[in-house]
Each structure stands twice: as C-alpha cells, then as structure tokens.
Amino acid sequence: MQQVKIFKSVDSELDELENTINRWLRKSGVRVLSISGNLANQSSGGQTMSSFAAGDVLIIVHYETTT
Image (tube, rainbow, N blue to C red; front, side):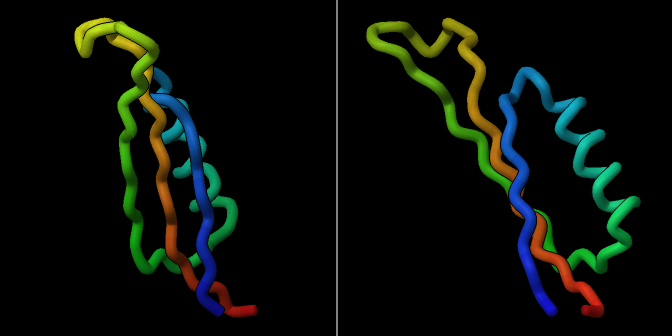
C-alpha cells in the first residue's frame, strides 16, 4: 500500500530534521518511492530579505508498505 509521511521543521534545524527522517526510515523499514521538499521563506512585516529569519521546511516521503 502506498502512503505519505510529512515532516516539518525550520531551515535553522536541518541537521535535526535529517536525523529524524533517517531514524524513521531505518525504524519503519519502508520502501521509499520518492522524497520531495520545499523551503518557504518567512517574512514579517517590513523586514528585509537579509534579516535571516528562519524559513519553514516541508519534506514529503512517498513510500510503500507491505500491509
């Protein structure tokens, strides 16, 4: 059966997000069909692009299980 798993974090915590995803992959033992992601910049009011505000990171894992 094909399913999806969504992971969400911020770009300042990419190392932890990567560890979380890899840990889940090892534990679940699923067959990954695809992984895609998106980074959305955060803007607040009149701040400029150089404010280094953390952006949202969304990772979608499309996988297959045997159940």
